[in-house]
Image (cartoon, rainbow, N blue to C red; front, side, top):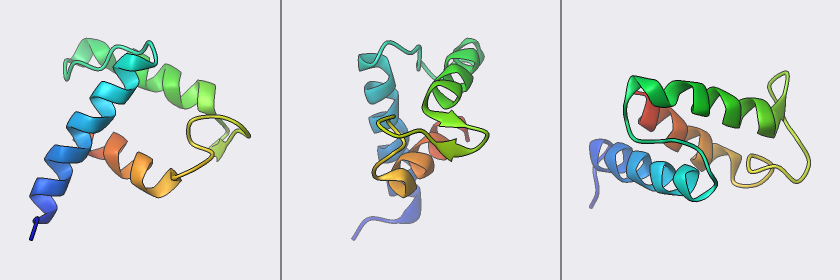
Length: 71
């Protein structure tokens, strides 16, 4: 049975790969933070997921993974 810490590490690694494959820098460095902000800006509008954006579906797991990446 996976622990929460396992889920955090797995999710952070998954979202880093997913962001990278979508053209965002996600290499766990402080320099990647502008790309995370760009991702959020491009896929949401004032905190609401945009239709057809990458946060429009599976929002909970994706936000958890982004939080794990940032943490």
